[in-house]
Structure formats: C-alpha cells, structure tokens
Length: 132
Image 1: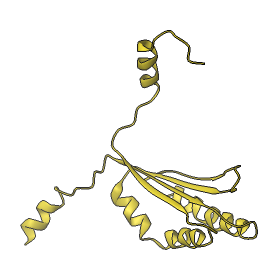
Image 2: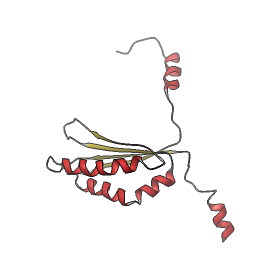
Image 3: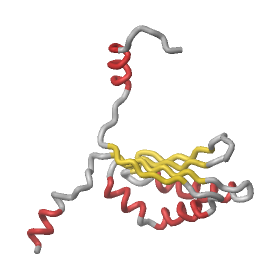
C-alpha cells in the first residue's frame, strides 16, 4: 500500500504548473451591497497573503445590475483546493448567499498564457484592411 501511495503522488491529475482563475459574480440588493463588499474586503488581504495566490480582486461593475465581481488567481491547483476548504472561503460563500439572483461562479484551469508576443505575431500576419 505504501508503494501505491508513493506512486500516486507522482500521478496526480492536478497540474502544479496550471493556473486557476476563480470568478464569482454576485448580484446584491442595494441594501446588502455594503455587507457583501465588507465580507469580500475582509478576506481579500488574507487571501492575497497566501503563498500561491497571485492576485485577488474586487470589482464593482457599473452595469444595470450593479454586480460585484470577486476574482482570484492561483498558481497551484492543490493550494486553490486548500483555499476552497478554508474558513475564509466560507465567508466568501456567505457573500454569495446575499445575491438577489443566481450568482455566476466559474473556475478556469489554464495551462498556457500568452502575452504581448501573441499580439505582435498576429499583427505581423494580419491583413492590411481596416475593419473599422
């Protein structure tokens, strides 16, 4: 059994090199907006302080629904999963419960990210016609 356990850690399907992006969009009522923001702000700092958290942001959307977007970026699936099980994530879920309509929640597992080099490569290959 010990040999199997030793091997299983090398064959874990979770990729340490992948990035996890957590996106939570909450739709609070006007009366509960401050409470939602207070809860999210109370976990933002401690979440950002975690070693594998690359970023944690709160964005107030200026749209018809006045939604709040809470985003995290993790460089380790294992650490992201640990975060999901944490007391701090329970507080995030408490904020989600205050949404007046079904919240939008997604977890994106990214294995590759491209930067400005992609723009340069595509612009070099782009036709010269202007679409605007």
